[in-house]
Image (cartoon, rainbow, N blue to C red; front, side, top):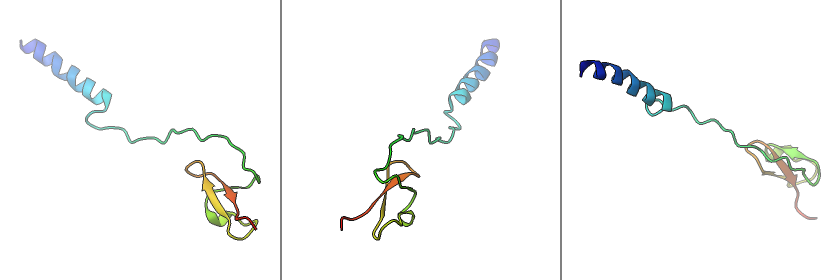
Length: 73
């Protein structure tokens, strides 16, 4: 019984640590950003990047990439 217990504890501990139940890994942002083309070919990260006309707004389609849009005249 002692021998079985001695070998099962490291096995269980290894399985728990290997699956990340005790110390989970931080989530990695692995989302794939779709490659789409902007109508006006002006990509942006924030509203202030849209300078082709007044009132430009950055419409993000990914976390850090978007297309500029402008109000109709």
